[in-house]
Amino acid sequence: MEKLKKLRDALIYPACVYFTLILFFFYSFGAAVKGKDVVLTISQIGLLFAFGLSLALCGLLFRVQGMNIIIKVALHFTGTVFAFVVFLVLLSGYFANTSGGLIITLIFCFLYVVVAAVILGIRAAVKRKENDDSRYQSQFDKLKNKE
Image (tube, rainbow, N blue to C red; front, top):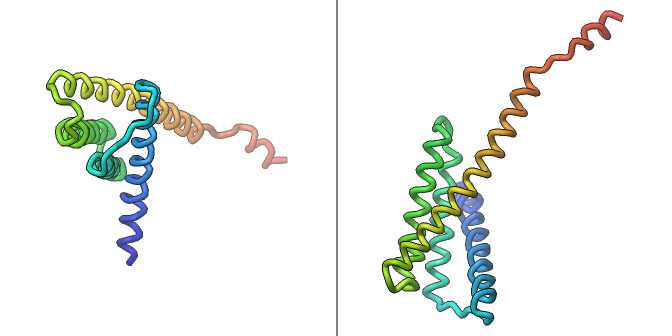
């Protein structure tokens, strides 16, 4: 039972969050571009959930201890792009021609790189701040203790 709870917390909940965000993006994008509601079939919704589940699986890479962050990001990028191509380009049938699928994949890769750069920049700044704070030792505490 405990393993099921860990699986739920580590995989199912993030997959549902990704799925919700992806659906929100699809419907918002469809409304903005076409000016009408987008109607997805049950198979398309299933593919979107499979993509969200694969994103959650790729996200588990960041929990691995002892692996360099660059390797984690590279593996996450590879897995995410692979899942995007398989579930949203090839299996969905939405992009009938090769050039459309290639263009949307390149746009996805560009967005991934931008988001990853921002997240890694914030992560580096936080780590730098933590390292700076841990090295600081007050010189005045010694004076207070003598009095």
